[in-house]
Length: 161
Image (cartoon, rainbow, N blue to C red; front, top):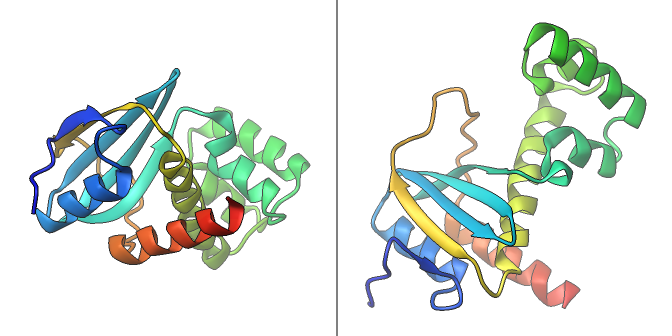
């Protein structure tokens, strides 16, 4: 199997190829993809996807929960004010306020990660760079099966496209 470089452009290697290579190598670290001012990161532990982040507002957990109908825009605004006052994590604030259950929060985090990665699969071009380690312990580790996630996203792309 061809060795995929740890940095380059996704026009040369698709995101599924890159993720499969990192999975095969059982990498623990962060894969960052930058395109048109957008930066998204996929966090891996032993080759499995455990989290994803983005610099886009629409990729934030609260916005995704509103779009999914799990919370109202007003609940998000209120939770956002509490976050600014206390510095607590948004998910914890929403659970404490009984806007969502812990199970709904976990669903929302998985939904967020899947949506961020789905948008990465749609890119034709963008620079990527994998770095070992480098992420803090305050991320919520989700343990998503990388192969299953890739299959699920490809199926979603076929339905959309």
